[in-house]
Length: 267
Image 1 (cartoon, rainbow, N blue to C red):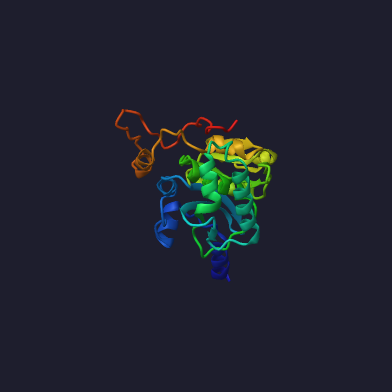
Image 2: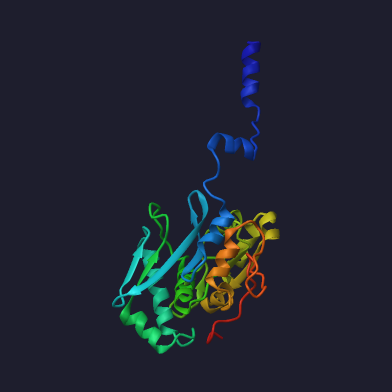
């Protein structure tokens, strides 16, 4: 009886696991989240969104490419109906605001008639749906068409309307925690989701910056890097070792770009 009681007590005792214990059992991490984000946002047309799943929050990349064609739009990455509608809304907003974005009339005509767009959501084995990628899709498209890089330290979430309004979305706590876990320190959120910040752990609040937006133009202002930061400079800042590489003219290219100037034509 005494042995049985002792065994029961031992079984009920809490077991403490360290990070090293978990890695020893499950194996090393698949990737280094911060460097993965930086390395993948090194050319126009790539933006980082956020998603909430039944398992928690995840980062969600959006990639856009433009090729010769006849105005077709291809969407891949196992996206469902609501997310496809977000793509359509983003395209319509951009087509209606080409002048405001500083795009020439020829760019508008090309977008409609002489080029095809391919919009891809990586990790195609995972089904994706919901409206919250609207701002990310719009940002990736604007980045590609203007040739402006997206900041590699920014993630975003929010639904858009045809008028460019940014609407609130769910899963803010899970999404922001996922951004923090990935090393992202600035998140663009719908203004109406400000109340959800109260649910975040204090450590996350202390270490992150939040830009509250109500219009997609504000997202574009905050997300695009200065026009004079080239793809090569961005690739250098993503390559590495934590240091800030210098360009040929001696400028430092930080991993975290400052808030950029507004694209031509965007008020």
